[in-house]
Length: 143
Image (cartoon, rainbow, N blue to C red; front, side):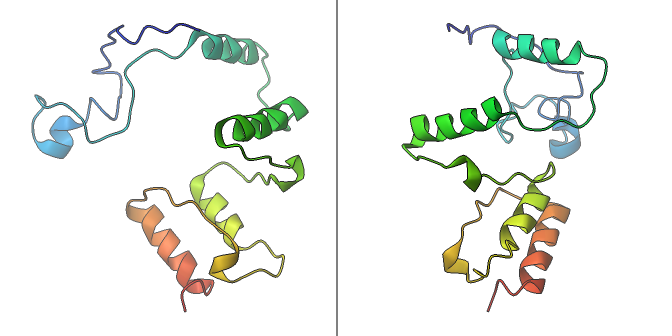
């Protein structure tokens, strides 16, 4: 698929965290917002088409993860990282980073020492960082 990264889209005054908060955070608007990892190019057409197809159904209720979804994850990990993942190893949790971190720390499988599992840590700010610190302290993750 060819993609044109030279298309310019003005995102100012669209509630863009990147472009509409310069005055709030830096006291001026004439700066380039290199402080945030955000993109200013349009979403790829196959993604837009898939989303449009899904939203054309009038009910957005809870769904399950299809076999093709799970196989796509396993295939991506194998292709990108040469890591063959058994679908049974995958564990999904409610949306959000904090539930995922909490779930990862309380597996209930008897392995509770820090060298026996890994949590990939995102950059956290404010209340999320405080939650994570409280979680680590209350669950004995620091000795």
